[in-house]
Amino acid sequence: MLQCLTSSSCVRLVQSHKSTWYFSFLVLGYLLYLVFGAVVFSSVELPYEDLLRQELRAIKKQFLQENPCLSEERLEKFLEKALEASNYGVSVLNNASANWNWDFTSALFFASTVLSTTGYGHTVPLSDGGKAFCIIYSVMGIPFTLLFLTAVVQRIMVFCTHRPVMYFHSQWGLSKSFVAIVHAALLATMAVSCFFLIPATIFSALEDNWNFLESFYFCFISLSTIGLGDYVPGEGSNQRFRELYKVGITVYLLLGLVVMLVVLETFCELQQLKQLRKMFYLKKQKPQDRIAILEHDQLSFTSTVVATPSYEDKTRHFLGVPVLTSPGGDDLLIQ
Image (tube, rainbow, N blue to C red):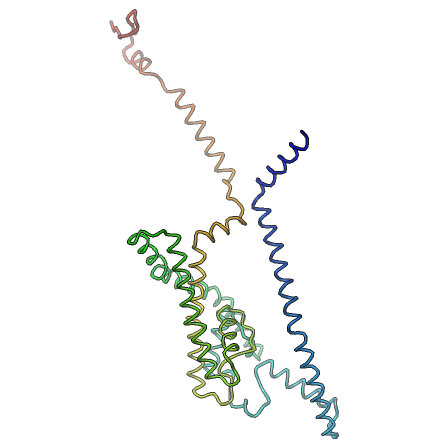
């Protein structure tokens, strides 16, 4: 008997806090996913890092042996200064000295990466005034960009998602959830083709030393606003029409970001995903003041109904004479 009561109370406890349990599993799953990513990245990339370190040590040792007049300390200082300049987007190589990082098209590309929070990191402000302006520009520009993207996506959703789904649902008699799933799949396929596969093919042809995988990697890292900065187009020394190329990349990034948001919003409006999200949300509860107002209105309505005078009371009060009834109680006899 005690065991039965204990099990039933545990079941009631789990049922009453179902969303909390789901949220706990969600947090645990996310932490495990982080650990899984760290393990995979470490196991895959660590051998390549070790191999690169060995190659650099061997090249440095060979260079010092071939140039005995140069000490290791002077070489270290030169390399440190060159790497620091490279972090700011300035290279000491002769084939890279022709490209300026802060001409108008490069600055336009930098502004688009800042406002879209992509932030490749290959070009950063050098002066204190540039850093201060970047802070102010981002504080005002990022919310402005979110507002702009929200308005654009909302208008595109009406024509690209809501109307097609309602048309096939009303005209063809198909299930709305089925039409929404098929539409989301087709939209995602078109987005991948037009903003990942085709641009990756173009980048692999225009950029030196970029294969298709690296170009596709750049497209994904850019349009997902990760922006690692290890691959940046238009930075080659022999890049033709570099200014026009930079403007085209800026337009591609903005359009691709809008399309990615449309696809994500389309999937988020699927009924199945809505039900999945509700599993982890807290249930909305009525505010206490609203409950008190409703209870007060209920009590007032009840008291009003009880205090309402009957028809006989009104008649007696109006005529001022007694109200008589027949012996059977059927008819009113007013004298």
